[in-house]
Image 1: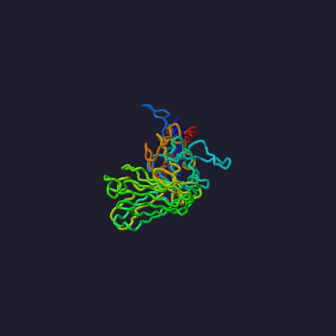
Image 2: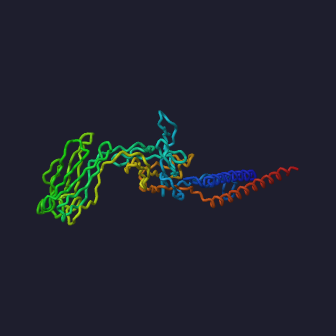
Image 3: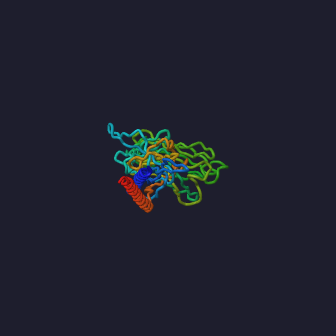
Length: 432
């Protein structure tokens, strides 16, 4: 009977509107939740019978309409480890299941999220506010990420081991107009234990376009007292050597110069013993025949332009930083840094079909398609915005409008139930 069908249709309307109201409530409650994606309501009608002569009342159901692909507002954050994605894509994260032998164990499944409020926990893992562990690629000593495996990123907070000096780069100008006063300079080098030692250099003019480089290392225990080598500039080396540039090395004692080939590096090699065995060091003076490194041009005073060396002392963990390409870098108090991982962006063919989980996380489904892991800002993935967070994509004004419509539609369906009930009562009363 159509009266019963009308009542059932109205009841299905009540159920559908109550679900829509529930979605609105969920959205409003999470309007300030980082990375939250609202759930809209999609109403679907079901037809019992519909022909040219008759249309019987059917029913309606409310299906969730997920908006994972809809971008939320990106806002700045004081947390240097927080990240937001400008564009499509998600962060890959893991869920911890406990510990075994002091090490954190993880769920075998990979979760995905847009909530980038990450911070470093006591174990060195990057964990967001919902307790999910950030996954990424590890970076080897060559600086290239290992893209064959994705795993939770962990920051090693151990010390930065000292590195003994093996190369020193010197850039200076010897005064061509002052040939009587020696030019003095000092180099600071590190041994294998990270201790600092001074190397005193003296440039003495020995003739036109010819200088003698002398080195004195007070801390050297090798017993070598004299280290000298002659350095020839311009025509003193050959008629074709450009004026003011290094053309060749002469005789030396304790210092060995490289073979003179135009354009090749002009280097001087020496060794010292600071108590840990022989340490070989190469002094780079530029290139033969080119105005780089050490030159001899007009002037009355020695001019030091730049001096650097590749040794470093021991360093303690200082901080962790993220770059726009997703590189995770550990910084030390000795001025050094080391990239240990890279954060990729994961994209799906249809992210709205991902399975929703607790804590703004999702799981891959057959309908969503395979997870495609790529570098940030490549292959359809969005850019990583550091020190930022993506806010919820909920619009409060829009939700309140939906709330009013759901409330009115619910009330209207109750009127249908009431009217159908009255008509049924009238039908029953026909017997009297």
